[in-house]
Image 1: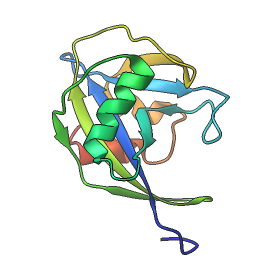
Image 2: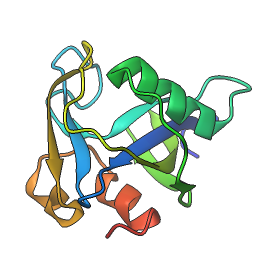
Image 3: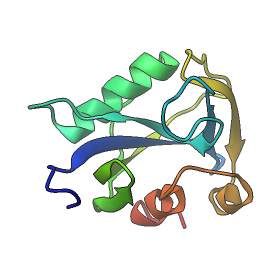
Length: 135
């Protein structure tokens, strides 16, 4: 924990298609954190909320998709300038090719998991894939 504050909890939703590709989203320049970088669907876990429920909520809010949890990975601890994050990675199987974006993202791409290293992405993104057994 840094600066004596409680860690913020973040749900990270990795969407996986039957062809083995995962969804990457480019963060809008309107984001306060990591603008323009690639990420998965993410969001803060609200007080009293289960992290898996937060991941499902974020996918619905950001992409308009209803999903069911496939599996979860180990918590990833990330140190940032603003404090410590506990990232909860979750995997969701989806059978879609197109998604609708909200203001939080400007574009998306479906990639092979190992290609994530070719993108300017937010910290810990490849760790999410490792935690879920995709890398």
